[in-house]
Length: 241
View 1 (cartoon, rainbow, N blue to C red):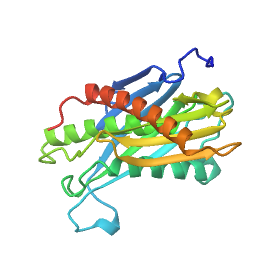
View 2: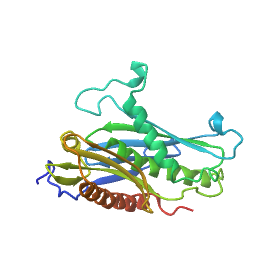
View 3: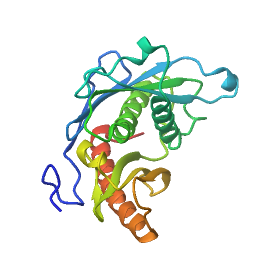
View 4: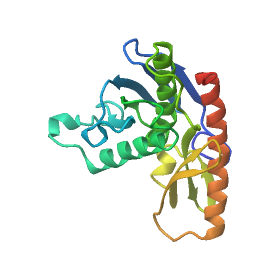
């Protein structure tokens, strides 16, 4: 099938990651996946949540937001509504879980690192782009902390990245843009580590159920895309420790 942007079914959109886009953050990147753009910043606090006090370990958490002009119609800021939507809560929890999976919390000391993922332009895959970019921002923050002698070693155990896959008219597709995502028969978001472990698989059949063979084909596509993303992450982060 011919995709909206002319890509092959197993082809990612063009991905770029520009680092140090915020002079005040310990680590920051602008990640662009096709027309989707997300600014990811890492901020360090000299404290941990109350449930971790005096336990000799740190914490990593995330916040996610869609800026008002990130879509065709203006999205109201959630701060003006007085509450965070369920979608936002689910995505920021997913980002936090994904990053904590690949960090040794004991080695990072009693610090909290906040990852803020702000979508400035959305065209599908904002949560997966946020995870991929936030990991790079986190690595940059740890490198700065080590440089400042706040930690002895960078506590990264593995890389982690995410992408989407789906199925339209029986064809498995990698990295769905918005037009594909909104019309997909099946939509999956896959988070995976550099060593091949799955952190999370979010999948939904919008119409007919899908079978084991189709699931395996979609995961194979996702794994191909994530491997490519991790190669790019490594180029941006440079050597860790």
